[in-house]
Image (cartoon, rainbow, N blue to C red; front, side):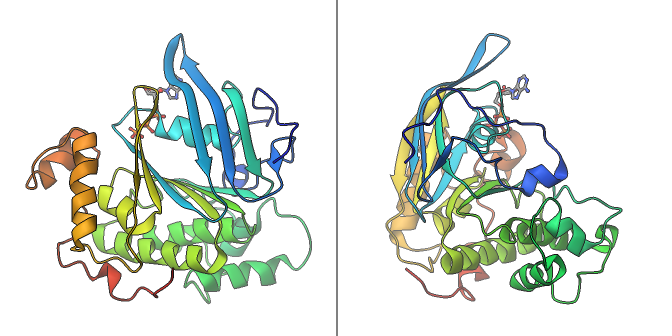
Length: 294
Ligand SMILES: Nc1ncnc2c1ncn2[C@@H]1O[C@H](COP(=O)(O)OP(=O)(O)OP(=O)(O)O)[C@@H](O)[C@H]1O
């Protein structure tokens, strides 16, 4: 890691569609491997402390999920790691190539899909690179489409392609499946898992969905009271069946950590707390098509 990491985030942080997916601007924050190290992170809004001395480490290639009640500061933390928040204090070390995918796809409607994918990307051969990234997310043949002609799931795939084309060492995902219907969500989750297995970026995924976190991540972190309140190692080989006993156990522990008790509160949880209700049926088909990988 760079010994020169600053004590405050130096990255300029205006937010535009191209920056949303693009790399964090080159800065002294870059480290020499693809992990993340955050120490002493603090963020207050109008004197109200949201993040208080947060420590976070992500190993190179590790998939980490961040859960927590609505308003606990998940997006604030992710934005800070992504260099999008100039108001944060602390030491943040991230790799040079970082890409972010948000819940909303943030595509420019007046640019064709392939141009959206390569917005802000340097170098030549942009169309070919966009087409390759689009193929990776299953959107062969859609390079010249207008964003307005895509479904929600397809748009989110374009957003993923926009991240992929930057060959990120760190992928920041802020509820990227949150706006998708249940079935599209399962497919998108499987896609992200496959892409991660193939490219092995480090990943920080903000999600409300406990099962999503348990299916995808190596570790799930619980954000509460301004800090990481609990950490769960998901020591289950992939692909992970939802009825794996350890997954069921971890799910119960995570839900308890989130203050949700009992197995049958699914609809109520989602409606009232926006936090943790399982989104998969108990016989989820999501795991079936997944490739096996470590
Ligand atoms: N720019 C801002 N100005 C003022 N307050 C903010 C700002 N951004 C976030 N906050 C506040 O900080 C707190 C944490 O917000 P954040 O969006 O990080 O929470 P979250 O855990 O991601 O929530 P959710 O799960 O609902 O998306 C909230 O109380 C929010 O109102």
